[in-house]
Length: 109
Length: 115
Image (cartoon, rainbow over all chains, first blue to last red; front, side, top):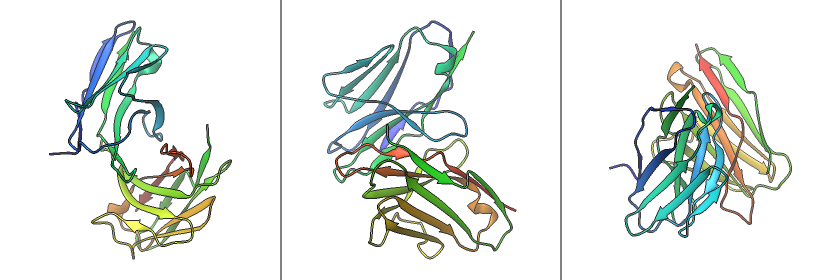
């Protein structure tokens, strides 16, 4: 079993819709959690950190459920520019980043 | 945010040659730099972690004699792919972290094609 698992997608979503991604992790000692975004043939860019209390940044909301060991990302009012691969990232106790394989999102006009 | 540069962005080389990739943190001192490799449609795979002034720590399955890493200063790390083969063709990405944070800042990546 992979340490971080994501649905690879692709998720085909009409512009303006709300889309949600989930990610599960297996290491209960994981310390920090992030969502990264990666455009095709580009490096990953940090989208947001994920906190236990949940956090919001504009149209993006991230939540963490430690008991169930999953992380979610919600995108509201999706834009064409949101099309990308979204990577769930979890750190081990030594701060090493463990990457999910990513979920591909395609926003259609 | 912090800026990390990587050079070259793209390189094509012949089988058997060596290729050096540079990773620089431009506006902060990076105590730790990471080298990743990403094959098409796959997740990033950590190759090695390097701390300034010490030997890199390689992940299982990564040959340290083939992928030479040097982290001579707090702003520069290099990865040299020695005797490259076509199966080494991949997207190589470096990242750097500052002493006070967990967050990693990524370079733009280097696309290596070995013919």
